[in-house]
Image (cartoon, rainbow, N blue to C red; front, top):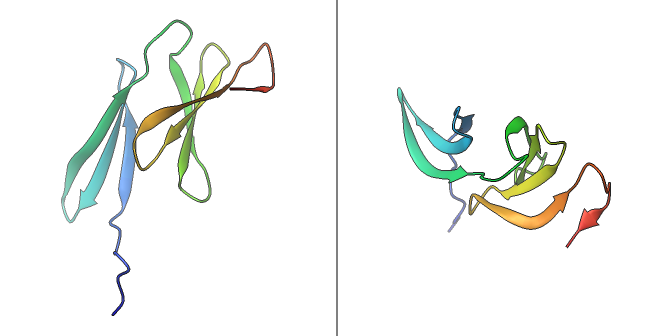
Amino acid sequence: MDNTRIQRPQLISLCDDNTLHLWEIEEKSLVELKSHLLEGKNKKISSICVEAAGKNVLLGTEGGNVYVLDASTFSVHEDAIYQDVSTRVR
């Protein structure tokens, strides 16, 4: 028996309050699955890029930093790329 789950298309939106929302697209409507607020100084999101594999979402901020959001849990990894360091910080 094939246990492959058919995934529905999904959409990520960003609101003015810096909250990301994950939506599942169903026929003629959107169903919100998860949301995440990125808070803190210099963390205003200015760009979003989904990695080719779809496992992570890269969040670029106005402060020049890049954060990694796990697409399955919709939480931010501790690892980040900081503009002034240009190395991966753990």
